[in-house]
Length: 283
Image (cartoon, rainbow, N blue to C red; front, side):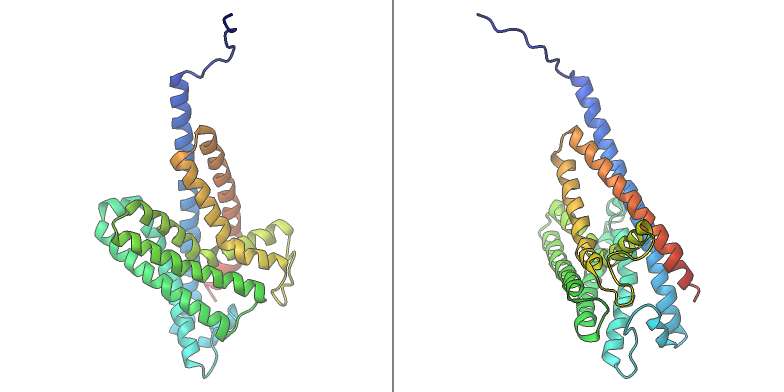
């Protein structure tokens, strides 16, 4: 006895192709949206570092480093002050170099610039991670042990990702190199994500919530100390999987998530820029 004809209507090939094209375009657009917001925010942060810390250094007023940073400048501690200065300088350099390194047009049209900028970026990231660990554990920093462990893991991941990005570049495995370079960029940006995330948290809650602003300790800051790089890395892995092997619905869903996260990040950037970075650039 013949089976009953199926009532399910297969999606015509042209509609499937159109859905695939739309989802790919949406995912690519959301990634560009995130990248532009990130570059703008990091450029403002780099300008803030140069203006505040570089400005005080140019005037010989190194005590001004303590305006925001605890133990920024300690009289008589030459090695510690040098480590702090190198860390601040590298923070500004890698914020600028990292954005340039991810621009596709630079990779295609100026490969030599891309290679040299990449070498400087890798070296700067490694030195910044090492000097940051020194400042955290030997120089002294605000926060509790949970935050210190979170920041330390961030530095370890920077060193690991830098090594893997370099290893795959030497092997000429460009696809793997780019993936590890993206992970490195996000790990290096952890300190920036922390500030943006904290400002977003303060804006949403109308002030400090889940932590004591006097001691800068509390569960909210402990979570943020790990989320500042683990969340962006998790989003990146989801994005890469959807981009490379996901269906139209997965790509559209990922595009929506990435756009929503970018809006939240943009709000944090705006609050940080208006309330913290721009005012202190004129101090």
